[in-house]
Structures are given as C-alpha cells and as structure tokens.
Length: 182
Ligand code: IMP
Image 1 (cartoon, rainbow, N blue to C red):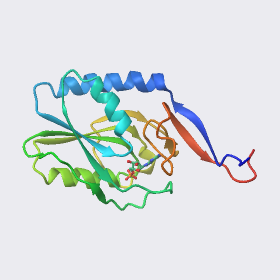
Image 2: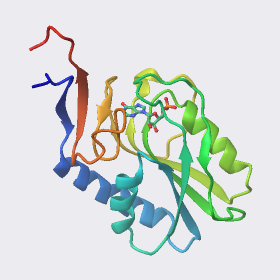
Image 3: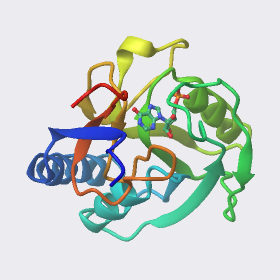
C-alpha cells in the first residue's frame, strides 16, 4: 500500500467554526440592516464558509461569485492573480462584502478590492474566515475575520491542497511527510 504523503492535525474544530460563524453573521446582520448588500464569494476556497455564513444572516442577501487562479499544487503564493470567472451582478451604488477563505500574503485581496472598487460600489468591506498575518506582504484592511492563525498551511472547510481536503468539516494543518517520516 502507498504510504500517506500528508498528515492533517485539527487547528479549528467544527464546533469552534459553527460558533464563530454565527457571531460573524450576527455582526454583519446588524451592520448592514436595511442596506442593499451583495455578498461576493471568492472561488473556490470560500464556498463553504459563505454558505454557512448566509444561512445565519437575519435577512436575504444577493450572492455572486468571482473565480480567481490559485496556487495550483504548490503551497507558496506566486503573487499573480487572474480572474477566471467574473461577476454577474452590477455593483454600482451597492454595498459589497467580499468573502474570502484566508488572507495570507494579502496580494489576492488587494487585487480584488481594487478591482471591485473600480466598479463604483457604495462600499467594499472584507470578511475572511482565516487571517494569517505572519506572511503579509501588502497592507490590506480586513473588516471581519473568523480566526487569526499561525504561519502554517491549512486545509479543510473549503480550503484545499492540490484540490484535496475541501470537504473536511474542520480546519487542519497540513504537514507534508517525507519518505523517512513514520
Ligand atoms: P494571498 O494572496 O497570499 O493572501 O493568498 C490568498 C489565497 O491563497 C487564498 O484565497 C487561498 O486560496 C490560498 N491560500 C493561502 N494560504 C493558504 C493555506 O494555508 N491553505 C490553503 N490555501 C491557502
């Protein structure tokens, strides 16, 4: 049998995720009450977080998605961002909440926020499930965050490594095992 190439240890449990996402949804519901809010998910990593978040909001919101290129099979950021799927909604005059899975170097977020602001929305704010500040390369404003995490590569709850592990119900640290490791 093939030896496992990766090991995953739990960093944030399902219970902790559920509790924090309810708190975030309550805060967002209060802040945007009565406003025309559009929630934009950044594919693919944010889809599970976004799905849970909107189910705890106090009212119905418009949801759209933006696809961007990711790291592929590597765990390192290239800093290059490419839009692979654009929005269907017009943002002019509307309040935009961009929902991300994780902010690492900040390069992706800065690119996306600038691209969204160019479409004349009434406001743009950012909500990320995870914030990994140790690796930040550019300054970005994060308005809502779930958890600040240490400098490790994480998977699960939407986040992948080479397209694997998105369906894990928790967030775990991925450790690549070398040939000698037991
Ligand atoms: P940034 O541009 O370096 O901030 O990276 C943002 C994107 O990289 C995220 O939306 C993720 O898709 C991916 N990413 C960064 N760190 C991780 C990680 O620890 N696990 C999985 N994906 C990550």
